[in-house]
Amino acid sequence: MIEPEKRCQEELTALKKEFEEFVYIVSHDIKTPMRAIVNIATWIEDDLGPDVNKDILDNFNLLKNRVGRLENMMNALLELSRVNRTKMELFEVSIPKLVNDCIEMLGDTINVEFHLTYNLLDKKCITLGKKLEKVIYSLLHNAIQFHDKVQKNVFVEVIENETDYEFVISDDGPGIPEEVKDKIFSIFYTANSKDVVDSTGAGLAICDKIIKMVGGKIQYAPGLNCGSIFKFNWPKTITVNN
Amino acid sequence: MINSNILVVDNCKVDVENAKKAFSILGLKDTLYFAENDLEAWDKLQGNQKISPIPKILLIDINQEGIKGIDLLLKIRKHEDLKSILIFVITGTDNEKNKSDALNLNIAGYLHKPIQSDKSFDFFSILYNYWNIIEYSSEKK
Amino acid sequence: MIQKLVNILLVEDDEVDVMNVKRAFSKNNIKNDLFVAGNGVEALEMLRGGIVPLPRIIILDINMPKMNGIEFLKEMREDENLKNISVFVMTTSNEDSDKINAYNLNVAGYILKPLSFEKFIASVATLKDFWSLCEM
Image (tube, rainbow over all chains, first blue to last red; front, side):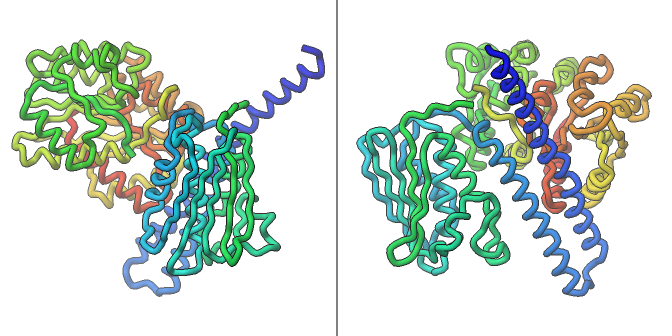
C-alpha cells in the first residue's frame, strides 16, 4: 500500500474507534444522570404524600415526560449510528407476510383501513429482513400517527421490477407542508410541535439511512387530493460494505 | 422479552405434563423442547437433533434416576458454544452433593418442584416473569 | 422450610442508583440485609474479609471505576471461595458485548435499569418472587 493511502486507513480506523467510544458514552454515561433525574422526581412526588397541589403534580409529570423524550432521542441516536452494524442478517422473507407483521405490530388499528396491492412474481426474497421491516413499520406508523381524521386509509403497493422492489406507502392524512418537505428526513425534525404529537422525529432519518445503505432511494410526494406518498425502492441483491 | 428456545430435561411424565400445561397457558409452547435424559439432551444441544438456534434456557431435574445431570452440566460449561446457557435446576428430591455441585457450576437457580400440581402454574409463571425481565445476548452468527 | 434470609451485596458506584435499589427494596418489603460496595475492588475485599455473611447473592453494575463488573466477575469466578455465588447484573448498558461477557461468566440474569422508578419497582418485585423459589 502506498504511504498516503496507508495513513488514510489508519485515520479511518482511529475515527471509527473514537466513534464507537462516543456512542458507548452516550448510551451509558449520559443515561445514568438522566435516570437519576426521573427517579429523584418520583421519590419527591412519593414523599410529598397524597395531599399535593395539582400544579406540582402536573409539573412533575412534565418533568418526567421531557426526560422520557430525552431518552427516546438518545435511543434514536444510538439506533441511527448502528444502522449498518446491528440486525444485519440476510434471510428469506415473504413480502406480504412482512407487511402483515408490521401492521400487527402497530397495535390498535380499529379506525384504519389498509389497502394492500401486490404485483409480485415471487413473494419471497432473501434480504435484510429486519431492516426492511423497520422501514415499512416506520412509514406505516407515521401514516397513522400523524393522521388528522378519525377514519384513516393507508395504502401499500409493492411492485417487483427486474432488479428491485418498489414500495409505495401512502395515506389520506394531512400531508406535509410544501415548505418543510426537504427537512423531514433530518434527525429529530417534526413538522408539528412535539407537544401536538409526541414523536421523536427520528423514524424517517433512520429509514433514509437504511435505504441508502442497501443502495435504494426514498422520496416523498404530496398526494393528489391530500395525504402523503412515500416511495422507495429496495434492491433485490444487497451488497453490504462496512 | 424471552424469545428463544427452551430445553427441558426430565423423565417424570407428570412433571413434564405440568410444565407443558403451564407453559402453554403462558404462551410458550412453540419454543419448548424436551429430553428424557442427559444423552438425549446432548443430542439436542450438539448432536444429530441439534436445536437451532441453541436454547438459551435449560431446565433440568438433576436428581431424577436415569439422568446424569451433573455430567451434562459439566459438558455444557466446558463447551464454547453452550457454556453461557442459563440453567435452572428444578427438582423434587433432595441431594446435597448434587446441589452443591450444581451451584458450583453456576446454575441460575436451584428450585424445588411444587408438590401440589395446582401450585405448578404459579411456580412456572414466576419463572416465566423472571425470564421476561432479563436480557439475552443476540444470536450468534 | 425455614430459609435463612440471603444477604445481598450491591456493587454499584452511583449514589442515586444505590438509593434507588434501597427504595425499591423497601417498596417491595424486602428485608434482606443489604451491603454496598462502590466498585469491584471494594466488593472483593468485602467478600474475602467476611463482611458479607453466607448465604449471599450479588447485584452487579457493569460500568464502574477501578474494577468494572466484568473484571470483577472474572476474578470472582476464579476464586475457589467465591465462585459459586449467584450474580444478577443490573446495568444501563445495552451493549451486546457486555451481555455476552456476563453470560459467559454465568450470571443468573442480566437486567436493564429502566428509566422509570415504577418499572424498576416491578422488576424488583419479579426478582423477589424468583429469589423466593431459589435455594442457596
